[in-house]
Image (cartoon, rainbow, N blue to C red; front, side, top):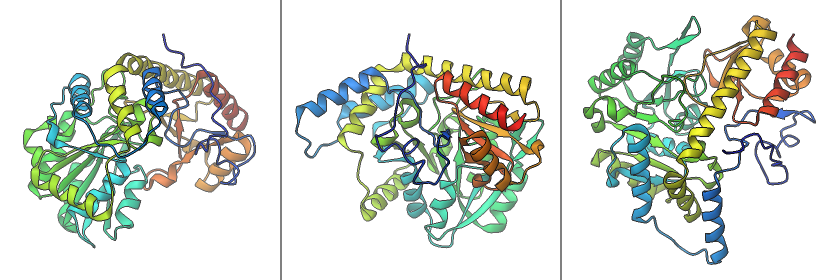
Length: 388
């Protein structure tokens, strides 16, 4: 019903993905598959709503209306069986901004914050830039699956007097969707040791096969007392440039600390266009999301079959969530610099290199598969030329 095969020319729009090739000193003609935004148009109802508002012609001060909160609440209940109350929702310009606000609101300088590795690299920046200490708890890869050593996690918390854990679910870049028993083990350890959990759930709408995204509060009602959930429409509907997220904080004390920190550092609510886009997305674009997720999963299956047939020494970590593929190149026998050079200069593909995600990432590459199939086919042929 929706045309995800259309190739859209995004050049000349100050697009980070396509218009920064020269400024980032990447080879001419390189195919960018690095940053996590999609090469699909946002749904037509969103385009219509934004166009109508822009054509009104007055762009003065605005506020977040009740209808906005109703749309967020309805989406979370319909899609994730997640019952959210209006007062829990704190609209914020973005999830990365929200992580930094949480770091400042709930910890102090030199406090320890624990994260898994490899993981979305702004987690590191959010901790380091605010003069907190990073404690790593590396994930374990066995038989193509990633798991956490919960005993090592607890030991690291105790030994380092950890104050916060930043959880990623679904997990960027490895594609893991945490199971209920895993989240329960994590939550119980954090509750036991008074560790605040910041759960980044921005990719919540991208889950595949029999995997189910479980919001952290749904694991145990007690977790509402010490956890914050980060959500946004940006990944699901390709709205990153509109800088809109919804931070869900059930505990009044935590919520007030978060809001006070926003006020102190001068972070305001999203702009009116972001609010319109979010509200329209959640109210009118559900069928589009269903077809989008199916299309992207088909891209994963195409990519997996291509690698198994043509490049069996390169292995896709089987996706549970995300539209980002985590691919194992370790059998190629290249160090991180040689792999990056070969990918750029011989394959002509610009990726987020695995090593930038930290411990356990070297030898891997992250591919953005939220692209038309013809673009993915091009990428596959480029890989074949360079790595067969």
